[in-house]
Image 1 (tube, rainbow, N blue to C red):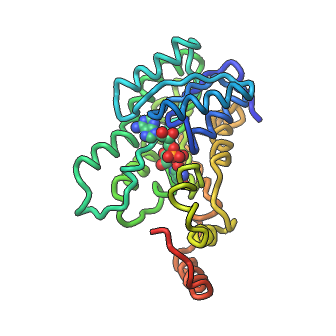
Image 2: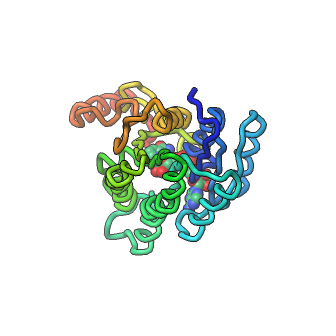
Image 3: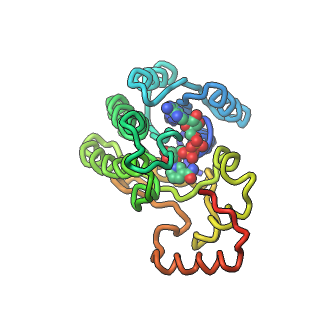
Length: 278
Ligand SMILES: NC(=O)c1ccc[n+]([C@@H]2O[C@H](COP(=O)([O-])OP(=O)(O)OC[C@H]3O[C@@H](n4cnc5c(N)ncnc54)[C@H](O)[C@@H]3O)[C@@H](O)[C@H]2O)c1
């Protein structure tokens, strides 16, 4: 546990998944948390869970792809609590993460994906910076992915934006360091959120077992494990860490691909009934 008492945190996409767990974790550690999410009902539900656990949370109905909503989001935090100390840029667009070849990827898909997963980070941070600086520094956390480090076919918009997040994090860290603001990124591996459980794994246990097999830890991650890393990077224990992209992936990305490929081929020989997820 860290001590965020007296601090104000904004978590975009903070209603569910990684953002949901992060909102709960920062609130449990004493922060006042603004859950900024496009899904009002889910945001209310998470805020209620936080309050019932003794924490402080409010919501802002925010579409991070809409620049006016991002200004409103920062204004709500400042109006309610008078300051901003932590900004977690986490929301993303599942439609932008769709599996399409470059030739099938439309200009609209590119624009809307980049707006939510890259431009929103720039604009939310830009509006938060004067408050973060005035309130003694603070911390911005940008959520990238292992997809920001390693490329996968047919995910142009997702890979481009997650790579951009790593570059933007370094850029912001260089420019905001003199203002006392630290900026770091997290690169999660496969994290089993409520959405992923419902849409990918609920009806496919053999596919899930195959996914787990790919990890040196032989399992996928939990939203709370990303929230723990975010809390560390926001905390005073990470006071000399900035511009870093922390890989939290159970070892997925450190493996030599050709050896992994052979091991997975053997796995499929042993378990031919495996139903691949895509
Ligand atoms: N889950 C994973 O395996 C994984 C792996 C690597 C990186 N990530 C990254 O972690 C972040 C969170 O992913 P997740 O899996 O927890 O997602 P999720 O789908 O479980 O939750 C996303 C949240 O964002 C909200 N949201 C969606 N569009 C929004 C918008 N335009 N404006 C505001 N809120 C919006 C949703 O309502 C939801 O509450 C994303 O940046 C994603 O790329 C996830």
